[in-house]
Amino acid sequence: MEFKTIIEPFRIRQVQPIRSTTRDERITALEKAGNNVFLLKAENVLIDLLTDSGTGAMSNEQWAGMMRSDESYAGAESYYRFESAVKDITGFKHIIPTHQGRAAERILFGAAVEEGQVVPNNTHFDTTRANIEVRGATAVDIPTPGSADTQSISPFKGNMDIDELKSILDQWADKVPMVMMTITNNSNGGQPVSLGNIREASELCKERGVPFFIDACRFAENSWFIKLREEGNENRTPIDIAREIFSLADGATMSAKKDGMANMGGFLALNDDALAEQCRSMLILTEGFPTYGGLAGYDLETVATGLYEALREDYLAYRIRTVAYVGEQLTNMGIPILQPPGGHAIYLDAKTWLSHIPQEQYPGWALANVLYQEGGIRASEIGSVMFGQQPDGSEKLADKELVRLAFPRRVYTQSHIDYVVEVLEYINTIKDTIKGVRITKQPAALRHFTAEFETVM
Ligand code: F0G
Image (cartoon, rainbow, N blue to C red; front, side, top):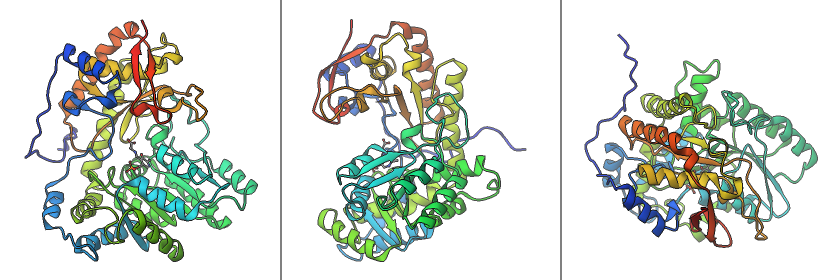
């Protein structure tokens, strides 16, 4: 008999209490935090869905690795274990450890991107974009046509628009230092990219002599979607699919805080000898010696083990099913979400759900605050507060007002998930009473982290 219940493929032998608070306590805590959930003390949060980055639970094997680690400054055993795991999975020649993903980005773009150049990506993550722009170059998003429609259902909505890539390469033949593919496409709903699409982008880049890089943060989740959804891959293992993905690229940047199952870590991996040498020089300047790159030996151990754990089928089945389950429950209740559910997160469509709140009053932000107030759940707005502030100080409303419920890896159980669904079900009954917010104080840039708000009465 094959039973249909998908269980958490682990048992729990160390627990960390989470603290319930009353609604009044939460209102006070939120007020103290300037009505900005980023400024809350984590101890006042019951279920924390702010990010899936660095928030996962490590396995017994990862903790054992930490105890075994070698903290030698140079040539530590832990580095060689890390290098061998990353090489085994990615196949790249040079493996450069970094403290997290954005450090890999900064080093890569610092070495390979110059002023006036153009870097296309299916969709840049914010730090990726910022690290290109700081070089005086332009970061261009070329998501697959139709992916802007939050309600359309398609298996690989994270894809790149290959025609657009062609036209960019035609137009700016000498101006494109590299093309990047983000898997899964976090800024576009955590949607996966198909192997076919990666292959097409790779072939085109090869033909034009342009290096092709993968932003690999959620490569294991993306591999799982390929197995589930792309014909011809159903009998392959996730690691086999992942190896093929990397074999199509010239290099990758990685935040091991996601599918590295680590609380900290990342890497830059690439084949080009000269570029690798340049990157290592920069690494020494700002991160550390090439065999630790800003990480402790024990961090390197957690990543070396975590990368394989992220590729386990029982884990991926449980992980992706959890997110799909939340999506199905909310859809059945008529709560609008970005469809279909992605790999690591559910994105609530606040503009549609709270259509009575004008966009100028940040419906996504208002919703994130209510989620905390009513249920002690922390989530992040991805809308006009995050993207609306222009460099000249003016305001430009975002296309979408989303609230992301990002799920930490191996942290929450099915009843935590059911609780989240129940809170949203309740919010659906009071949604018309939710009021918009206005900003009372904000910094000059990246305002969502520290701005303060009040309710519009
Ligand atoms: N690329 C993507 C697609 C990401 O989602 C992130 C981080 C990074 C690069 C940068 O990695 O944080 O290790 O420096 N995303 C986190 C998030 C912060 O919440 O989505 P990092």
